Image (cartoon, rainbow, N blue to C red; front, side, top):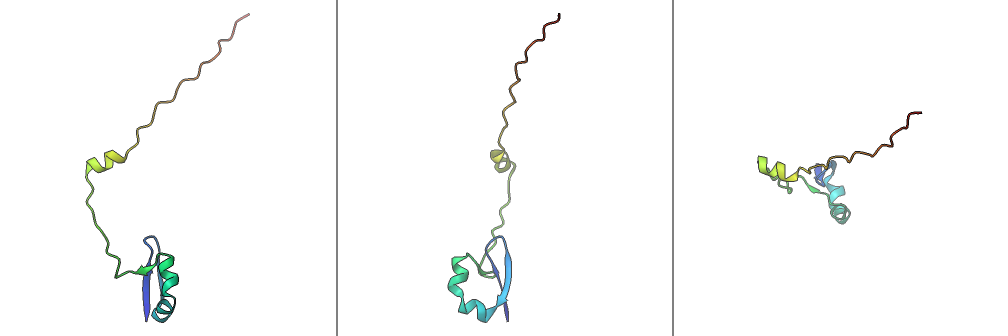
Length: 70
């Protein structure tokens, strides 16, 4: 019997016996069974997106030396 484990980024499949024998190891590394992790679905609004946008500053123009004509 296999069990799916996830840490939020990865999903791995291990034997259930191996998972139960090494439970502390998996918990320390942040892996939990997929069925225990509840996915939160949040609808985003335009305001949430615009709050996270960082406005970039315009680049400063460099002062150039004028060349003298001879």
